[in-house]
Image: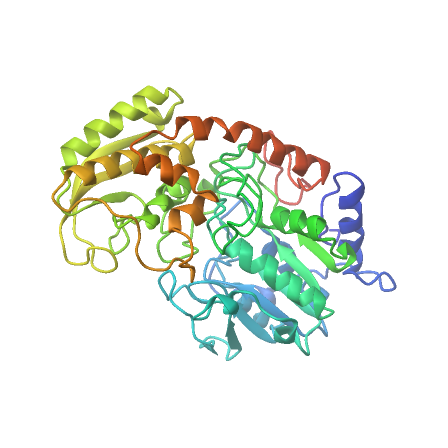
Length: 461
């Protein structure tokens, strides 16, 4: 079996592929992977999946890490096909990381959103854990000094395909700091739960950059984490000989049900199900309001509402708007009148009225759905005794712009809603941005995976 390498897709990916066969060191060819022995196997978990992620490819050739001092940026969803945590599996194979690094929520996903993760020691291996999410905005972007004494950064994070989800920003900023420190960067790729064929949403306007909008992509970008890193590498002019991708096999861009072949594990505390991930591009917009997006319940990003709202009224108005869209949303997403009591965060301890979003099938336009939901909830709340208000607290350490402006990369939709208008005209402008982004991805040759049937494990994408 050949050493893992990046799929070729034109001239620039060939540079990445060359780096993949040499680990970025052209004078020393990568040795062929050794055959795993019984002692290398995880003690209890058997492989039950047919989607192999980048971590599985690296674990098949652990000698690639021999003699390397490396940091592993990962979290609790960084699991092998045997459901073994990445750092535990690497330590078992005799190639433990020198340091672990955790994104927002911490290495084990202990913290809620916008809560600083403390540095610690991993209880499973005794390895030090550094936090890349502290208590101020400066903590979000590591310095090259964080990689002093290391020669490699390995990134293994499960992204969920939305511009707001902060793991991509952490991965890119950590990779940039590592490269500046003279390290190589390996990205262990994973599937995008939203698929890789559709993009949706606007490109952020200049001046609206933030941790939830760090890069010029649509809300639903249609790329894997490795493809996004490659896109930013080419935008920023990184030395690609120091960048290596371990790709996924058993997945294609049009594959929206890969999680049936590799069960979903929550990458963050409020992303417990694939259903939540599928509608997150729209439901996350409620974070910009004082309405509950379901945090503090067992169904975050599926239960929505606020005290004083009439569940029947919310459902009736929302179903009417979904039916008018005529894009398939009313068949993919169903709504149920709901009462719920969050146990923490917004409206903790109070009964909220609203709806539960039931995901019947992957929604065709989750971001547009979220705007329709926000429009309905805003109007229903404005008519209620409690009224409606946008989020008052800082959002990801920013207080200079409203949270909705940061999420959508523009002040226009908030201003339209505040005037009592609809966002239809603004949404109509997405098409040009979506086409611009598709064209850039093609020109920069960042696509690693095909359309059509998923390649089987062991077969190159």
